Amino acid sequence: MYPKISVNLGNLVLSLSDALDLAFSSLAMHQQRTAFIAWELAKRAKLEEKRIENVFIAGLLHDIGALSIEEKKTLHDNETSEVEQHCIRGMNLFKSNPWFAPCADLVRCHHRGWTTWEEPRDTPKVFDSQILFLADYLERQVDRKTYILHQDEALCSRLKELAGKQINSDIVDLFLELSIREEFWLDLTSPRLYSLLLHHGPFQTIEVDINNIAIFAKLLSMIVDFKSPFTATHSSGVAQCSMLLAEMVGMSESEVKLMEIAGLLHDLGKLVVPNLILEKPAGLTQTEMAVIKQHTYYTFSILTTVAGLQMIAEWGAYHHERLDGKGYPFKREGHEMNLGARIMAVSDIFTALAEDRPYRKGMGAERIKTILQGQASHGIQDPRIIKLLLENIEEVRKAVTERQEQARQYYNTEVEKSE
Image 1: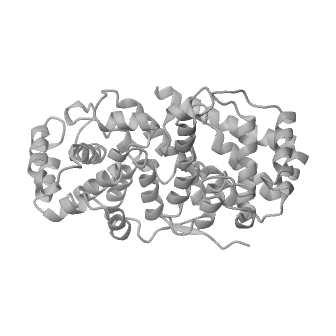
Image 2: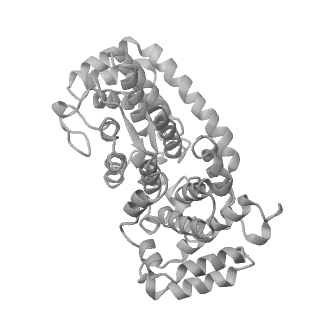
Image 3: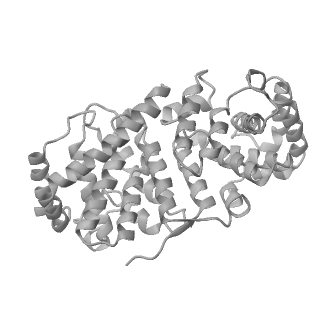
């Protein structure tokens, strides 16, 4: 029996934000910094607590709709005028999560300039979106190679130029009042900003239980899988397979739920892998494989920053480990892989073999059986779990296919329509 799990909401959302910004060094902490600026502005404007919380969450995840490293870099470097796609995708992803749905309009409108609004501009939606606009714009203007107090005046001058044009003048004035504090700028660029927001930001006392963790896990899995049409349903499939295998080995209902969460999150580290590698229509070179090998490391690294998710982190991040110690990246051996990790490894292999990939079509049941039997007989993966899977392969494959089809339908309607 595993312990009851709950996690702090602020810790969870901050770690999600951190994960989304890992992909490119010039983006590091962009969303956290944006959230910090927006949070300080919202407090200075004396907004009610719920609006402050919504502005904060929207700031932490405002670029959630930028699905690939390449798209994130283009947006951050102001190399495109096509900002609508990631705003629409972001709005749709927010709406899929009941915790984030109230912030969806802010994400949708965070690139909308002050004079372009067609609806009345004296509403909370417009005001709060403008706070996010200023925060996002300002953070992207910060030169990370220059000491912040050597550029603060120049940054304020740029904002003054946008007052009444791109940004509500009242919000610019609020920021200028805020900007006279050196502390603000030093906090903004501090490497300890995550800790500051965790311990002093919103949601310090809000805990979420296993069912709500599963809701967040579903959102995270969509962000990972939707990076590419070739991976758009993978985590859903792994989650379904691992749940069924967990039931077959006699895990409790709560343990089965934890396996589902771990399955949804197992590839979280793929956020750091370029799409050029994920979508390569041929085998990977040694250099490319070295890049791929970091993804499970980052799955573990991201999840263990959330107090209470250590076990889920191990189950999810060990899916490329092998009983013979020749897996990656941790080189765990059989005695170091608990039952959940063993189930996850087999579930990932089965789901991947059955899926279409850029370089091959999905395999049939007989071919999958042959490969898995070989892994069992050579001591690569757990023979007991593989035996259970093969004895029930039609049932498992049907359930996995149905769940993946649901994920594919969502991808087709909510992601591709924003293209």
